[in-house]
Length: 226
Image (tube, rainbow, N blue to C red; front, side, top):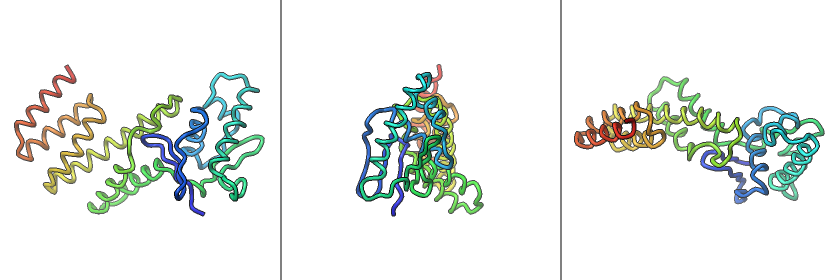
């Protein structure tokens, strides 16, 4: 009865209990599973799935590709003994992953950030931000290049960037310099071209009593930007 957990940060992976699926028959099959998992709250017309995963393909070939990919996905997510349709719902017109049968790291990440934004308690907000930061184990679906994935990669990376900066600010106020500096360095590593990340790190290094390291970071900023 456990739901499948589909991870998309840092790579595509499906887990339930001791069973893990990390390799898929084709890259397009993985892209289809990722799309269905990411948008699991609604059913998707087969024509839309064809355009998303196989843009520009002839309609008959596209319909065949969808059928073959869904067959492989069903074999993974509904192994023998699992009622047909309990995870993957499909008919001649549309396809959907049962939202009660799966959970995703992306949904958990966004839920933690949403809850953090609603609470006014610093300790609770910090715990929720920490939960979100730990869920982000790398960019969304690396190695996949569909347009929707590239757009979501940027959006989610921006949310993560904001979360680690806010969390670093909290630890700085508590003078927990090691944690604050670690997060600030993660922000710089995420996007070395964002000047504000370098500025945060420089300020924290200076506040932590490391002026020479702050100066070195300034030189690094000049090297990167100029």
